[in-house]
Length: 232
Image (cartoon, rainbow, N blue to C red):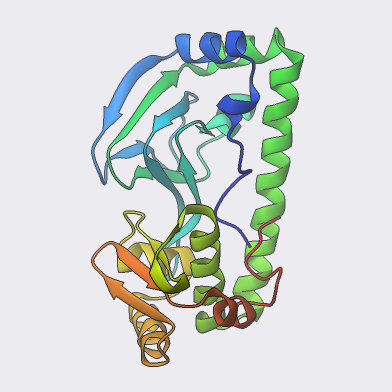
C-alpha cells in the first residue's frame, strides 16, 4: 500500500514550456490548514495543481474518513472528474498552508489534447494510483492495525523523514493522530493503542506533529518485510 505517488512529481516530469502553460491556465489560490480544496460528491470538474504544501485525499466510510493518499507541491488533484465528468470520488483537504493553481476542467482537457507527452504522464499517474488503491484494499482486509501502522510509518519515513543522531528518523508532516488513524484505516483509539505498544518497545517517540523512529528495520519487518511499505 502507498500514500505517495512517484518520487518525481508531475510538474518535474513536464518540460519547462508545458509546466508553465499548465500553471498559467489556472487561477492562483491559497488554502489554510483544514480547508477543503475538493469535496467528495461534488460535480465540479476543475483540476488543482498543488504548488506548495501537503494535501490529504480522503473518502468517507462507515468507520470514518479514510486517507487514500498524500499529495505535495508539484502534483495534480481532481483530474479524474475533469476527464470523465463524474462526481468527485474523494475529498482533498489541506494539511497545512497550500498554494495552488486551479485550472477549469475544459482548459485542462484542451491542454492534454494538444500535448501527447503530458497526456501520457497523467494517464500513467492515474494507473499507478489505481494500483495503489488495490494494494490498500488488500492491506485493509488482511493486515492488523499494528502492521498497517508500521507500514505507514516506514513509508512516511522513507519519503519525508529526516535523519537525526543515532540513526533515528524524524517525521514532521502536519499529521494529527486522527489523520494517522485515517491513513491506516482504523479508529483513533486503535492507532493510539498501537503507538503506545511501539513506544513501550522503544521503537518510536511521539510529540505534537512529530514522530521519531529509533530503528526502521523492526517496523519494516512488522509492516510486511522489505516490500511491506512500498506502494503500487
